[in-house]
Image (tube, rainbow, N blue to C red; front, side, top):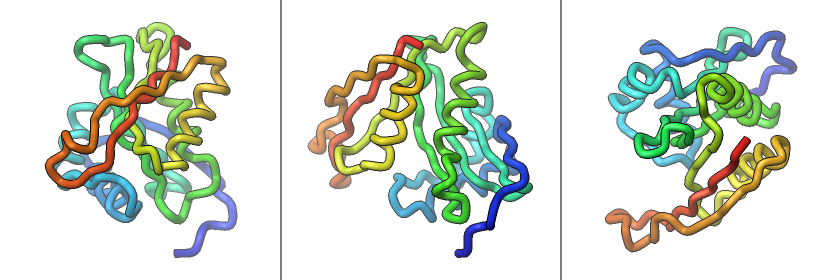
Length: 166
């Protein structure tokens, strides 16, 4: 799929129900994310819109970040998935979405930490979250969270990346 020459406008906002199908498609077409059912993305767009973000590039779905506040630690934002449409990769969109979402939820909203899980071989996600931590001057801890044996489907182990406080 050809990439646009240069985007004239990138907008960030909370997802709505219309975005659910685009989120599912981007996750599926990423070929690296664990793809949830299309129903799950519709629910995510409805129930976790305040802690998630979508990007549109010249009115075209460009990417999304889904997250939620940890119930046992509401000042921690757990990032579930980050996806960028293939046509808009290589433009720093994932980082810009992450920055915008965290900026929106920190300060008065009280988010001071960010967490995500990443498999050891996912160098793109490791680079994204390491760059995010470095730019904010925030410490980053990496600890094992889910061992491969915990997954019934042959999933790789997941490391917990905890960033903050910021």
